[in-house]
Amino acid sequence: MVTENKVMATLANASEDYLKLLAYVQDSEHGQILEYKKVQKETGVKMDTAGKSKLRRAIIRSKREYSVIPNTGYKMASADMTMGILTFRLVGIDNKVRKAERSQKILQQQFFEELPADQKQNVLFVGAVFGAIRQSAEQGKRLYSREHKQIAQHNPIIPSNV
Image (cartoon, rainbow, N blue to C red; front, top):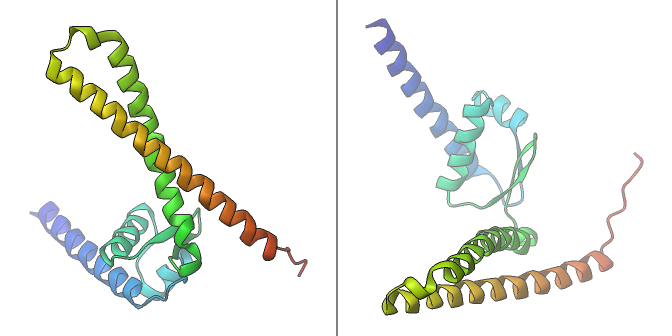
């Protein structure tokens, strides 16, 4: 009975913490950095592993995009971060597709002749899909990297010694 009460109290507290974080995220501005220490101070939600996870879920639930600042918190998306976030997602997709394409090629080399005609056609189709995705990802990365270099040339980042 005591254990059951503890579990219920923990679940109620977890929900309360999540709702606090959800409200906090919804009130945050685009581009605002949600530092773990500041979030903990302002919401009262402890920013341990579980609290950080709740914060991330609250951001996602709020239909907001973000960038992770390791050991610090999350930076809410803003217009100047759009291509960076999208490129990061594209690179992730490209990495997974590269591995899948490698598997497709190996399986095709090893077993293609043993497959029935319909499966042969499907193996070739899947290979073409992977190739198209990889080509699109490469073009996107080249385009963004060129754009990023041009922006960096016009707005150099100079560290201050203050």
